Image (cartoon, rainbow, N blue to C red):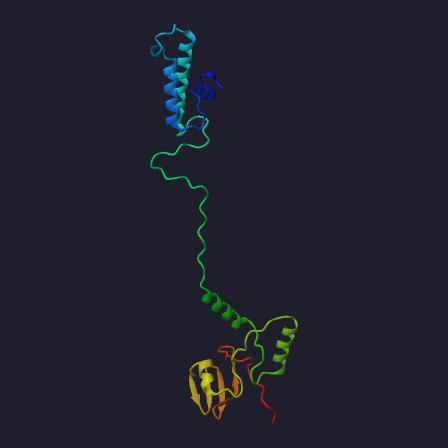
Length: 214
C-alpha cells in the first residue's frame, strides 16, 4: 500500500478501529490535530518531525474522507454505513411468494371426474355379459382398485332413469325412444332392448344387450 494511502497507519495514529463510526473518526482526528498542531503548544520548541506528521495526517484524513464520499463507508469498514432515511437492508432474502392453493373441493371433484371417465365399474350393471365381470375380476387380481359402479343403460331400467341418463329423445313411437340413429325400446316402462350407434352412442356397455334365447 502506498505511503499516502496507508489507512491502517492512519487508524493506529488516531487510536480508532477501521470499523468505527464516521463521527468517532472525525473526533479522533480533531483530538490528534490538537496534539500535533504547533499553535496549540506554544511552550514547545519547533519540531520538524511533528510538522511532517501533521501534514501526513491531514493528507491521509482527506483521502479517507474522499473514499467515504465515494463508497459510503470508511476505508477498511466491512459494510457501508447506513444513510439517514434509507431503508434497512434485510438480514435474509425474502421468501418467494407461495403458489396459489387450489381449493380442496376442486381437487376432489377433478379426481372423481377422472375416476368416472377412466376406471371400470366394480360390478357390471344388469344385463351386462359375463365377459365384463371377468375383466373387473382380472383387474382386481392385478391390484387395481375399481371406482364406484357407474350407472349405465341396462335391461329393466325405468324410463325415468333413462331420461336422466340419455336426456330427451328426438322421437317417441310405439314404446321406442329414438336418439338419432340410436334407439331404446321399452315394455311396461322398462328397457328391454336398444341399439347404440357410433354416430350417437348411448351410455351403455354394449351396442346391443344380451337378449334371452327364445
